[in-house]
Length: 142
Length: 166
Image (spheres, each protein chain N blue to C red):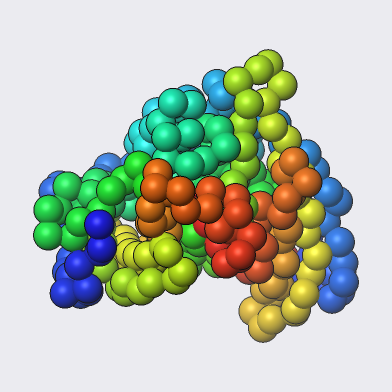
């Protein structure tokens, strides 16, 4: 494990620069195949609407993966992530067009822990809604 | 349909061990758009101290889906997958998964509860190598939306009310 960020260079309040991740229908189809989650609410507009959703919604796990990239790219080593939890507070609604939706992720260091670990609070928004809330990652820094 | 509370504690074992391969890691990393070379380049992974390429942090969802697939078809549990949205998810790692790991997953029904018109089903999946080494525990809370087709609030509204649901 070789994180690029040093524990001593990080303080409580250190912000991880915000990033935007696109989510298109094709991304959901590809993710369904790779993950094995073929729930039709992630690809069938007919099914999604029939169960009361506004439209096809992204897999929560796809959104979780995008938010995780904010932390692992920052740390410089995905293996440095030791704990990761998210709460899906609203769905990411993905229209059937070439643009799709956008998920904007930000993070801030909330706590310095022993063993060179830090706890990072993550927030993600899409279409004006907070799609990840009370979400945290614990990462072991250099 | 209500989730059967009597099934708390029931375990679903992976029918066979899951072999983590370089090809599957590459496919998953591409699907999430993550270009980190530790997922695809063995030399880079070794320079970071790993025995082989490692899997992205959310990769264990694949093994978790195996357990959930068994839960979905368990007639005693009474789960309607199309009414399921994901409430929350966590992973606690001992170490990253890497290519070459052969993993057995035991998924346990940890709890069932009601919230508003919805039901919350928590599944806990413990993943160990066939040698018995614990690698990661994944906890997955599912929201089974109640009666949306009968005119209950749509998920986005329900989510705003309850602070939970996708």
